[in-house]
Amino acid sequence: MKRLAAVLILLAGALVASRFTQAALKPGDQAPDFTTQASLGGKVSTFSLAAALKNGPVVLYFYPAAFTTGCTIEAHLFAEAIDRYQALGATVIGVSNDKIETLNKFSVSECRSKFAVAADTDQKIMKSYDAVMLGKSDYANRTSYVIAPNHTIIYEYSALNPDKHVENTLQALQQWAARNKK
Image (cartoon, rainbow, N blue to C red; front, side):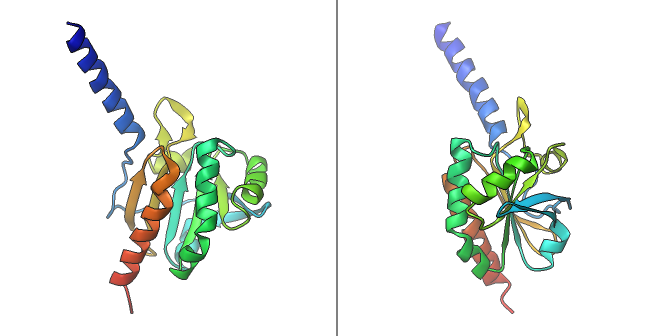
């Protein structure tokens, strides 16, 4: 009986954990358009996905909260790789539920003024991308998307561990660029 209870607990935990790491939008889906306040280097501007896609692909990554350990690691990794993204013609934008005042500081210190981070205080963007963390509606799940200029999602990756988001999105961009050489 104890063994059965342990198996059921493990299965329930696996189901919950899988929800934390699955995005509903998959490659081939159309990316929902959005416009929101963003901060780059501590300066607030308006970020429009449609406008950014006119310049090339967009790496849209959701993260739970500025200045937390995992989100700081992830921001540093994106900042360190920004030249590689730019070489592929891509724009990087991070999105969280943080207020723009918090993101002004985060964009300078943790993002190193290399890419913008956007405020989604009403969770409309997170909800449209199914990136709301289960059980914590104020927080985004750690999910990264690569979006082609035609608004098509070409890659998605969800994992609470921040380590592979940069590597995986760069690889997806490189593959997309190789297929779309003119």
